[in-house]
Image 1 (cartoon, rainbow, N blue to C red):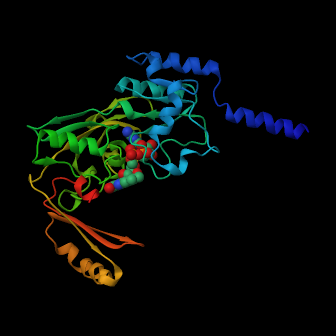
Image 2: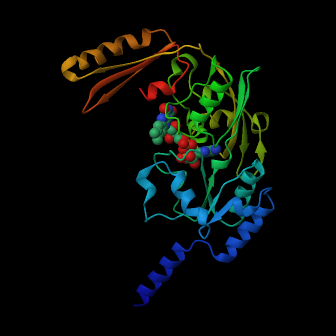
Image 3: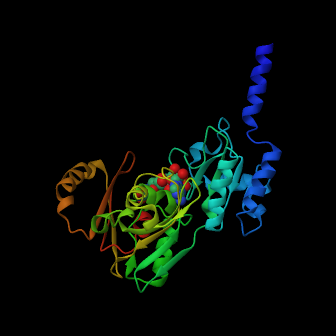
Length: 306
Ligand SMILES: Cc1cc2nc3c(=O)[nH]c(=O)nc-3n(C[C@H](O)[C@H](O)[C@H](O)COP(=O)(O)OP(=O)(O)OC[C@H]3O[C@@H](n4cnc5c(N)ncnc54)[C@H](O)[C@@H]3O)c2cc1C
């Protein structure tokens, strides 16, 4: 009996990670760092926006309805860099871990799951993209998606692009942190290879640029994996030159249409093809083999939807 009561008390303690008093304290702490009203940035479990944000931000259905995991004590949706800084400092002060989320596509749910009391730092409202056509660069806030990046560049220029992934809803924050492969990688490398500066908030809430963080940290945040070193709030990237015309094709072959031979031969010639040509092969159980490619790629999204 005593054992059961102890277990129940322990269970109740673990599912109530933060008391209302702490909730007030956290909001007060955040208000020192926020320019917007803190209620629009800090979403507690009592807020009407909480469930919506939790549902909307997670792009991996595997974890969506999981009841066995802790829910965040707060979701913080910063609009400024000071609010990102504030969330880190206030979480630290209140013993809460931080899960940072940009596009919410993490395969393992690392941007929204935690075994200990935590907050989600959701960059959904931190997503502006500033393109400098003259210098062929852009500053991109981490909450933007790569689709927004392509769209905004294309609005300003049809001869500039950026080499990153295919799925337009993937978030810049996690994608650039992990490298970022896509259809222009043969010619221009990974997204991470084209990053020239970043704005980085470390665990002590310091906001650092490339020179201040040092070349070792700058190297590590470009491919070392999201959430490993701190929060990258924005990235400065070098845009790449692309022709205004792109040719896209899809060749579909079933196994009984020499699909195996096609893949076999492709492996021998792929590395010898001009670097302006990208081909990817999808082998699917039901449909056979799809060869999708583009020549002189300027518009990566069209391949994805082909
Ligand atoms: C449908 C789909 C298509 C994909 N297509 C491609 C592709 O074409 N090419 C490719 O290379 N990859 C692709 N990926 C993989 C994708 O790049 C990674 O899953 C990436 O980490 C997702 O980033 P996110 O911001 O959307 O995810 P999130 O879940 O928000 O973040 C992923 C990880 O990065 C951390 N993180 C997020 N933002 C920040 C930040 N600002 N600072 C520090 N850490 C941060 C998170 O805490 C988490 O650990 C794809 C994934 C999916 C689900």
